[in-house]
Image 1 (cartoon, rainbow, N blue to C red):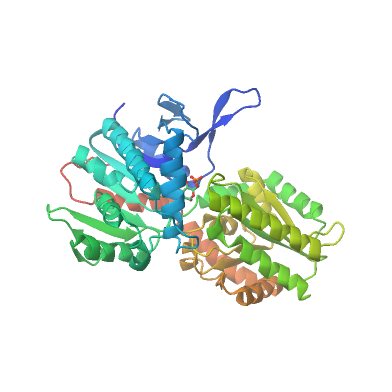
Image 2: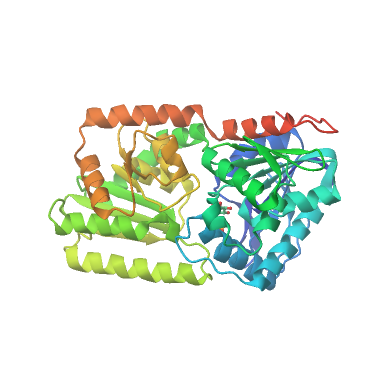
Length: 471
Ligand code: G6P
């Protein structure tokens, strides 16, 4: 197998799932990344390298719906040290403003290096001469450098889907220099926001000592690395279409009925993650009920929490905290047949998500820190009637684009209460004005635009070979 375009991500775009009869099958993961990359992958017979989600299963490369997938085997130790450990116990909290305390363990770092090396080696094996490689996210920051050493002929891009922290926080990592050098193996390093690119360039200057000018880093070997922002988005058209689907709208009506036809439905949809500010938003809503600003006969909060990283200690604790808070709020504030919060700990199919977005009057997205937050954009894409309100944390990357949302500081409970109430009471005209502007933004900068602008920029980097991978 030789490919002109290789995507390297921790996860494959399909998950290995067990069927009721015990056999294993592949299920397309709902993520937007695959829809963004599908056209370029197809046009180039590209390959996607990643982990299929299980342990110790050696799987052959295979084709799924015309995409070439190359599964990486992960042992229990790899998962513990690379995935749960360094990626999600060290980097994830550190890169999200230390919302939780990052842990630094030398074995985790060893595991991170080991797994990054295996990904780089696999990629070096399948990339054709002069191919373009696009490495995704924080789990694989050492891959660009490792790959360049093996294959100097490649054009290498890296994209970080999560925030890149300010120098003051990044300095904490004992292996900060290695991480920066890992990224500098790429020709183009992409971030969600310009501030993140600036943080990176500043750190490279301070910690590695390379010369920099604006968004360029000059390496001693004559190569330069470009750092820039490419805010990610969603497949607007496919959400808009799904939202128009009759069965989706029927289901939205049914959801309203099943919730007891409240005046307004508030909705939260998140991976169950401590960065998402679920606790704070439920507290704010609970206080509005307690203060009798809202009444459970009129308003219900639906919170969908998608199970995530369940073996990591901080995630277990978060689950218990949310369970307890929901129980307490429902116990204190609910009435018979009228809970304050309808809480679902599950992942839902896309059509059910769209039905929830259609049913919800107020979408509440309040992360303490978030690279982008695509849920906010999905909600907007589903509101073709130009109604519905978005309450959005100013610390989500999406806040840079969705300026017409009710922007909140999730650390400020009173501020959030005020914003929720304003959104609750807003006139239809006001909702339309805001939603129209937000829809325009999301429709014009969709995920195709994201992928194409990154690949165009990467193709423009002067290199030895110039195979064009653009569609
Ligand atoms: C975030 C990360 C992704 C990750 C996803 C799900 O969006 O940026 O890289 O795949 O969360 O998390 P998981 O740990 O299940 O892969």
